[in-house]
Amino acid sequence: MKVRFSTLSILLVLVFLSCDSARKEVKMEKLPYFDLKGFMDLEVAKLDGVSVSKVSRINGNEKSAEVTLSSQEWKEEFQAFYEADINKPSLALSYSTNAYYEYLIHELLPGEKGKVKEIKIKYNKDYPSSITFRMKDENMFFSTATSGEFYLNQLTQKLDHYTIETTQKVVFMEPTNIKISGVVR
Image (cartoon, rainbow, N blue to C red; front, top):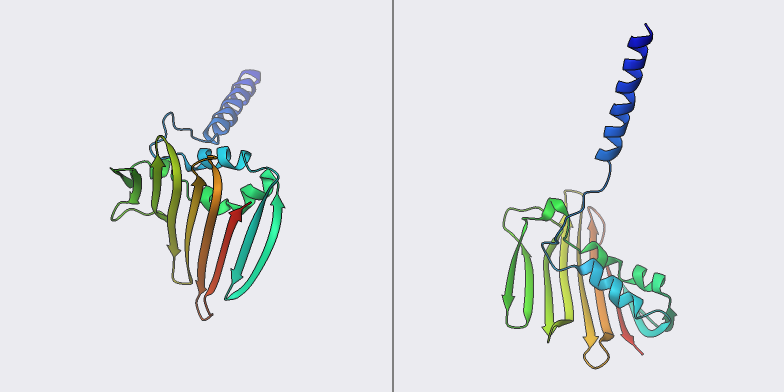
């Protein structure tokens, strides 16, 4: 009886340990696409305490403000760029990668499922000078399209200006359009 109980106990412990290791996040050794999340982390670190002339437009109603943002607030401001990162194991073979002159372009392959349709990186020398993306997601109840532009000043190698625009449409409702743009001071 004791042998059976101890064997059962050991077996249960092994099952719990194996379940724990299965929950760990899968990390890729080499990223297959441009590291947008890592790039944004580098650029956001340069912006702590920097002021921006910001224009917010919601369904045509526009507001302007001069604000100073912390690193965390900049990260929240650029959440759409973080969401556009395509370096996930499930997307490892979903995009074509092409280089044309100073551009690196990742496009969703036909028949593949992914919200991010395109990421375009323009290089000046060996560092990105601009990044743009397009995302789209839809089902029978809603559709959403988001685009973003991020431009760096070539002299300072810091953010110069940016734009993020989202249009959301829920069935039986009018579409909502939100556009945020900013110029760093």
